[in-house]
Length: 228
Length: 208
Image 1: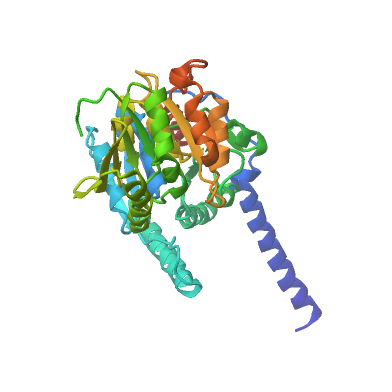
Image 2: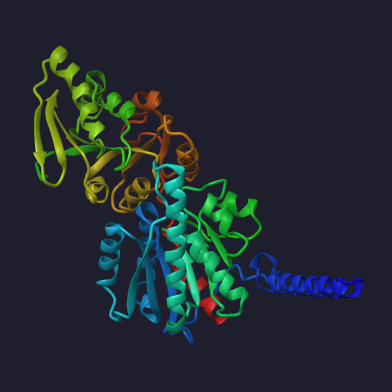
């Protein structure tokens, strides 16, 4: 390889890298300086039948999410709802069905993904499990492509939210979708974000916390009072 | 679980982990004697002691002493809804101990004058949200045996809002003795939930 070809190859590579970085800066919510109103507005126009994906994590996470959705009342009907539930979590399905009993518009679907979080098993099997979970989430996302990826992904943890959020972010990076990620931190977090919250922070468009000290500590966290 | 009791006290430790140190302090002859003297209206204590198998074992250990030393007669039976139930009477106060029930906090805290609870957000919110109509005194006990679960932070944060009292296992007795029937301070109620804000934020993100 002569000197000139080498220079061309390296330059092309550097230009590509630069393009990737510029794209990342455009897409990454953490780099976006746009400030949202402290008091969100209240209109219902143009949001009818948009696709909203909600993760029902498990136990306490599902409990908090259901309490929040309960307060939406009839307005939950405005969305085309997709609920993501971990395999084997029958309590969440039960709670969801109870919530959906009260809605008029039954336009919702439940998708089951493999559970990543397994406490007590050894490192190798938990690694395999994490990979299966990633693959299951990936299949889930690819499958979504024809049905349309969601306009908003709403989650309050736990760790299962991370692979979904990052896969959606990669799709956004590639220009496949324009999904906004909204993360709600658990009421149990007073002074520090959870690990899930911390990992989702850079790619999340909005981060809502339930205690004031947290919103003071992290610039991108917003506080509107206790949500549940 | 209907009955003709006047007032009751609820002690609840959550579903997932049991809280033996707290249960030990409550199912104690001295504690119950104090209740019967200080709170003349309380004639029933409902204790939710936890789902795990080990909690049943823990209950046997605690009750063994009571049966041997104080000659208390304990009735034990298996209930479809509540799991293994223990029932006994000390100083005319009926004490019923159940494993777990999903609706326990929501349903029974309404009928209570005092609730003693672990510092889990689920239980705290269940009690505080059912508080509107009558004034329940909520005492939250931090489980110091649990590492890294933020119970102290949660308890302190809620206490600073004036909606509950937070203490450690060793302070429970004194907490309950003091301030009988809200003589001094009346606790505030929690501001209404703001979950509707999330709907607005979702709409805002769709529109943007």
